[in-house]
Picture 1 (tube, rainbow over the protein chains, first blue to last red):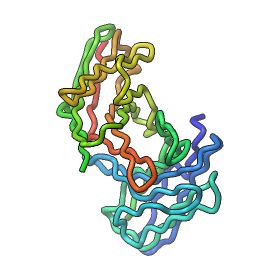
Picture 2: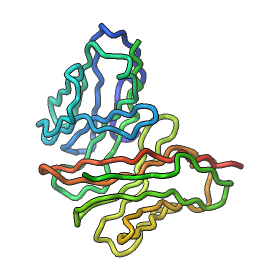
Picture 3: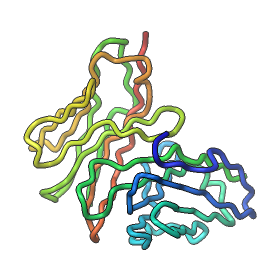
Length: 115
Length: 116
């Protein structure tokens, strides 16, 4: 148990489907992140939420829509995805944007396949 | 812009031997943090070790140590007494503080295979 839980672990969806990825942390952290890990590419930061407010969107296509209803939960809503969006999506949390940060805690990821 | 470079796509080591995984970074910041993460085939990113830019001593955590050479901008991970369970991807990352918050920038990773 890492303290950051992601569901589902695996997801296969068609290009016309709508699905959501869920991330939950019980560490008392107040910053949460979505990363995308594609084959043979470094991890890419997608979204950053600090105190439930989105502070960065790294030019992610609008077919990815994040939601952070509170400091413990983070969602990534998916719609009309493309096959190249198939990847491992990792959620992470940290103690906060301004404090000392000795590492992020990551979830186990959701492996997404778009068919 | 900050950059993390891991030049070794793959490494292998015999069980019980030590191995060094290379990482160089590029930053103009005076205050920064360097991290190493392990990612087994399950996908989870496991935090291993942290080195702050102002830390005078190299960080150590059990069998992991970080060889920090600030002038050369390198932060190599040393794993002593390798075990079969060490086989995984290893990522070097740098903390970037901008816009009032922290974020981690990752290198491309090194795949380590430990042979019996």
